[in-house]
Image (cartoon, rainbow, N blue to C red; front, side):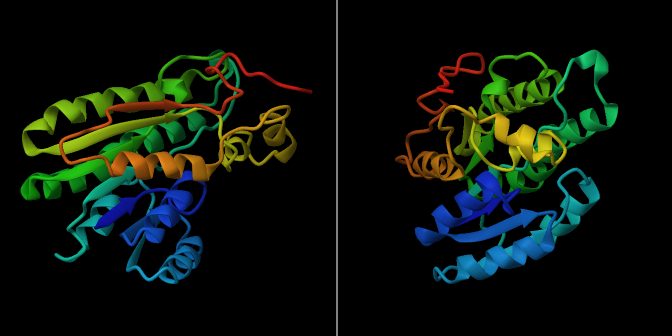
Length: 250
């Protein structure tokens, strides 16, 4: 079995890669940071699996086409695509927003997912099998204050997931959306432009999910019986009811 995981150099993507490697899946791991990809490849190969790295930015359609188009026939036999690459940039009222941040989120979270899927869906269609897992967010289910464009981008992911499930149904391709709440990764650090104090503050007073939790759920979703598809999974830590209510003990 073989999986392609985008955004594999940190957070959810890295944890998902380790989980699947531990269960003897060969992997194609992608990301912008080539040095991190090479480090990840070395660690994964210690688990006895084959690993191919592809360094590219999902926002750049030409890079996506060139990288994924370079796969030889063996590596093109992809059983699972995990569209994980995504980010939040900035946090504040929409009227004070930075259009560069808007572009970055929409280009990564929405267009990047489309560009990668565009290259992999025909392969799955030809094989009449496959599974696409899109990593969304609770932000794609409800809008919260100061989330605006990030929430919009994740709502788009939710809509695209539903559309893919309909359009790919005749080809026997599963499509699953996994929508996590707060999880402690590089997410907040990126959102706050490297401000570690602000990033740490997001998780004060409660125990958020970890990247390994998302990896476990992704593994479960990918290994349901052939006649089943988990369509939509929303998960949070026990302390978090949804995007608005978190039980903090300060």
